[in-house]
Amino acid sequence: MNNQTDPWEELHKNYQNRDWIDKPSMFAETAVSYFPKNGKILDLGAGQGQDSRFFAEHGYEVTSTDVEDSALKLSDSKLTEALRDKITLQKIDLREALPFPDESFDVVYAHLSLHYFDTETTIRLFGQISRVLKQGGILAFFVNSTSDPECGSGKMLEKDYFRVGAVGKRFFDVESAKQFAQDFRVQLLDNNGETYKDNDMGVHNLIRFIGNKI
Image (cartoon, rainbow, N blue to C red; front, side, top):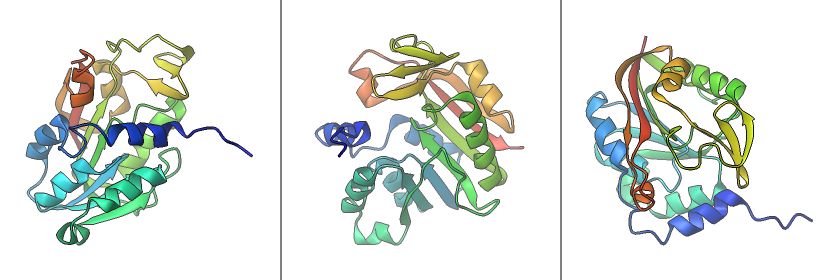
């Protein structure tokens, strides 16, 4: 019998007690200004769903996904009746093919969920994102930076990818973000990203990317 604690479940338990957990992220508040005025959003690795709810409140139809059952349960518990008509919750493992037809979404959004994979998996994931986006659709993602204090800690698995604690973490810079997202025309790309949780640790330089599918 495996009694090992799931690191993601522990993380979401910890986040439940933070005063920012039900606020839209800083990146979501920036990204929404680049989105079409309406349409379908795929939120990858949505956690407890605060950004999914924010987008739905702005009139979008949102498919809110996560790999962790406890996160999806928490997200479901926070849905009002009105939002249940606009948000579909779905369990998805980003290491596998996205279970959607080609060109299904106007926006794919990913806040701190694309930086857990080796190069081969990351390339395949970006290809899947491009596949499910409509032509001209928006990709908005937010990821760890090579300027992060954790970068270089733990066991190096490949360039910019380390096992930190129980999970693998990839650290991006502006150039690697552009390379992985080469199917997209850049609208915003910098290392000025901030989060409420990282601000507590003095980290203010995460990678922000917003671009259109070419």
